[in-house]
Each structure stands twice: as C-alpha cells, then as structure tokens.
Length: 278
Image (cartoon, rainbow, N blue to C red; front, side, top):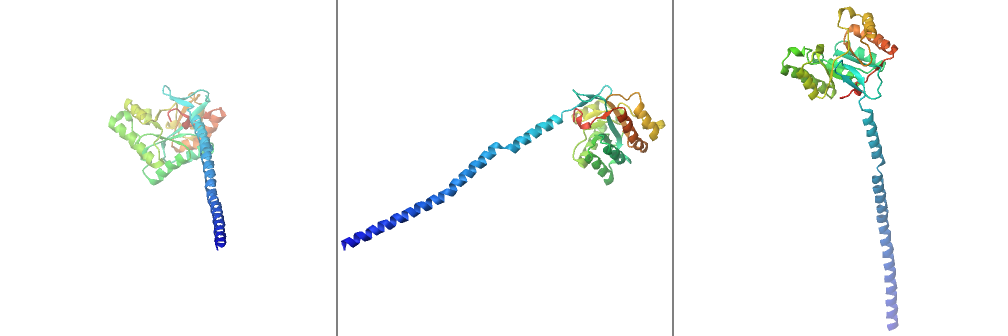
C-alpha cells in the first residue's frame, strides 16, 4: 500500500510540473505582444523626433518670407516707384481709379489676359448694389490689388477731420466686408491730401499713393487713339512712372494699345504686392 501511495504522489508531482511548464509558456506568449507594442512605440517616437514634414514646412515658410521682401517703394517727392536693391528699374505701375463703375471688369480682363498687375482704387458709391459688390470681389479674386479712393469722392481739403475719417474708414469697412481684407493703398480724390488724411492712412497701415501722370479726364484725350498716344509718348514717361487711369469707356478702349506701347518701349510692370509697406 505504501509503495502504491508513493507512486500516486510521484505521478501527481509530475502532473503538477507539466502544468507549471504550460503556464510558463502561456505567460511568455502573453508577454510577446507587449514587446511588439514597445517596439512600435519606439518607432513612433523616432518618427516624431525626425519630423521631416515639419522641417520642410519651415523651409517653405522661409522661402515665402524671402519672396515677400519688398522690391519697390513709393517716392513721395514725385510719387514714382523706386526699385530697392537689384529690382528692375525700367518699370511702370498701372492704377485704375473710380472703380468698379461701368468698365472695370473689361479693363481687368484686358490686364489679366496680358498678365499685367494693377491697383484698382474703388469708391464707396460704386459699391451700393450686389452686382457692384460682386464685381469688386471678382477683381480681388483675379489677383488685383484693391485701393481706397474714399467713400463719395470728395475733395478732402473741403472736409472736417471727422468727415475725412468717415470717408476713409467707412470705405475700409465696406471693402473688408466684401473681400475679407482692408485695402492696402489709399489715393485721395484729385490728389488732394491733408495732414490729417496722411496721418490716418499711416495709422491704418496703408500705403499713401498719388500719381506721376494721367490724362484721361481731359477733354482732348477722351478717345482711344489720342489717349494711347499721350500715355505712351508723354515726356513724363520714365522709370518708375505711376500711371493714373480711370474706369472710363475711352480708357478701356485705349488700354490694350497703352500696354502694347509700353512693352514696345521696354517697360515692365510693377506688382503692387512687391511695394514696401504691403
């Protein structure tokens, strides 16, 4: 009997040992996924540390800053556009006042088709209807710079400071409500600035603008042929000339010839976005 009991006990011990081995194997198998997870975590952390896309984004931002460096500045002595550093000298700046009246979109298409940048100076009394507001939005979406030409086109020298402020700031708000940003340039009607308007424009971080020459409001130049001739052959055409034109039928008709004549004389065209202060 004793011998059988020892045999039974020995069998039980062997069985327990076998079970213990199976338990250890199961435990190892359960730990293996934890090891894999740790490896994955390390790979993720290493990928995070590398952050290659972020470095590329930083480099791209640096390039954008470099491109955005101003190439020209406005000379307030004669309102010409002066090159900075190595920017091209033989250039002109195209500007269109009193927009968007009846011919702004046609003029914009002419300029766009020839890849000519320009500033459209707008008036508040041309932004009363949904159609006019849509035209302004289209001008902006076409890539043209938008300027403030006052709300109702008065002579600022005839107004009080409060009235001048309303003329400028009210139009800023209107424009921003339509295109999502304030205008970057200001030109006073008739070129008539005041000390107050100059200070206000500076506070609004807009570039004060006037012009070098323009003729399309004079009676003798209210046809395409004569206007084209004077704009291209005037003695005032020189490097950096700031060209004033208006949203007028005869100006729109003359615009293709003016652009062609300027190109034939070797002039390039300043991108308003490259002007200092923008």
